[in-house]
Structure formats: structure tokens, C-alpha cells
Image (cartoon, rainbow, N blue to C red):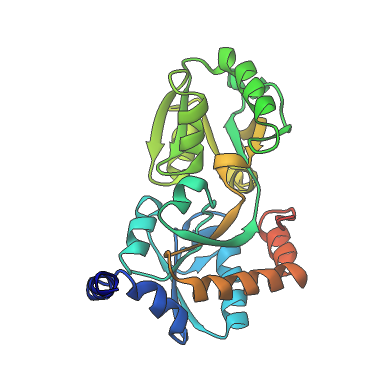
Length: 283
């Protein structure tokens, strides 16, 4: 008994028990949400410096539902999780998929959108005729089929240069399935790898299908085209979710409730159709 008491005292003194208790007991009235501001249509930065996009509009709905005052700030994607855990903000809404690897260091809300990962190249590139175009493979329910699809792609893309965003699930997909097959170039933002694709410095890119669909529709990107199959599930995650510090159980419950309301009343359907052109509502 005495030993247990001493251990509990040490845990409290060092703050090991404090975070979870604070998150559960505090009355949340203000929240700071981090987004990238460079991942349209999920999030983007207007010419005047204001943030906009699917997640920005959705965050306003969620905050109104939770009855809290929210501030949305921009943060580089590759430093988001460390900054969240350092307490620089309270939540992440940046097209971030709730993968098992990320769940090791942070928690996630339920999903507010799922599009999967796809490839894009430029018209005239030999990869324009990449097979399995439009076909969807789940790493969760059909991992064997996904691997078979990758094997079909390998001879065609071998030695090609692919662009991916640093710390993205696309980067992990390439590392897991195509390591040593393609040459990888990483970029801080997806917009940067798009510019290199258009300039001919990379042969193709991999990113969220939602992002690519909107990107190829821009007049400046008229030479870009989506090619090959699409992958989702498994380590690619269940879809975009709000990232939260471990132990912030009250905040997670608040976001889960607000997202459920947004699904039920059609807000997610309406906003995703506005920004993406199709319904991202998780099933």
C-alpha cells in the first residue's frame, strides 16, 4: 500500500496523470485549430492571407455546434504532430488521415471525409496510359488485390521519379509498396510537387484523390491528368479526421458529437460537394 501511494505521488508530481485529468475536467470554451493552408480544397490560403476551404468551413460548423470560440491558424504539415503535442494548438484539421502509425502518438476524432490516394501525371507522358484507371483497392479488405495491382504497375513505373509530400500517407505508401522501384522526391507541400510535375522534373505524383480532382480542374493545371488506380484503407487510414493530443478525451468526444451531427444533417455532404464535386461523407 505504501509503495503504491509513493508511486502515485511521483506520477502526479511529474505530471504523468495531469494531462488526461485536465482534459476531462476543464470547461472547454476556446480552441485553436491548426491547418496547412496549402492543401486545396481541404484547406488553402487566399491572396489576402485568409484561410479557406472545406475544412475551414467545416470547422466553423463544428465550433458552433460545440459552442466554443475557435481560432484557425496555419502550420507546416510535417511539423504538425510535434507542435500539437508541444501544446502550440489544440487540434489539427489538415486532411490528415487517422493511420495506425499516427495513432501511436496522437488521438483522432471520427472521420469527416475519405477519398483515398491516387496518381497524377501530365498529358503526353507515357504514364498517361497507366492501367487500372479509376479502380479502387482497399488495403484493409482487399490487401491481396492491392498488391496485385501494384505488381501490375511496377514494370511500367520502374525508374520513374515520383513526387510526394513529406510525412504524408502517400510517402508511406511508396515506401511500403514501391521502395527501390521508383525514385522519390519529397516536398513540403503538394503544390510544390505539382509545379515540378508541370515543369517535367518528376514523372508523376501521388496525393489524395480529393486534392488531385480539384487540382487538375484548375486552368493552370490543364496538362495534369489523374491516372491509374486509387488506394484507401489499412495504413492509409479511415479518412481525414481531427488530430488531438492523447488524453484530451473530452475534446475528442466534443468533436465526435459535432462531426456526427454534420453527417446526419447533410453538412458534410453539402460542403464536400461544394469543394470537391462529390460526396466525401464517411460510410
